[in-house]
Length: 125
Image (tube, rainbow, N blue to C red; front, side, top):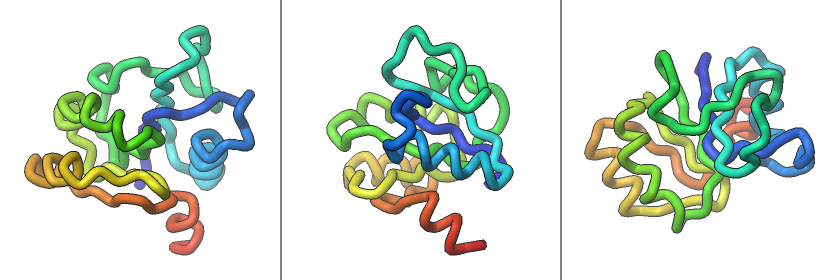
């Protein structure tokens, strides 16, 4: 993947949390990160990149949408994700929602539930 949008990314102030250090790692290995924080309305930039507040505002193709949201919050993002049309939606470790995943798959979007993108990327070399 060359371009990854991170829904639910945290800020540098939360650098010890996976929602920050996973995208930080991806960026360190050459992945273009598009930060999409859910909170932190005052933050304008994360990892040196301008934040996007709405998935529908992302310009250009997204290879992977990496999601750091609670399962109960996922259905609220469904329509925006389908409109974005990423190649893959990656639900980080511990995140799964079968109905949400089925609806994305029905829209032709690959889904990877409950896996860490940092671990899998590092293992792939």
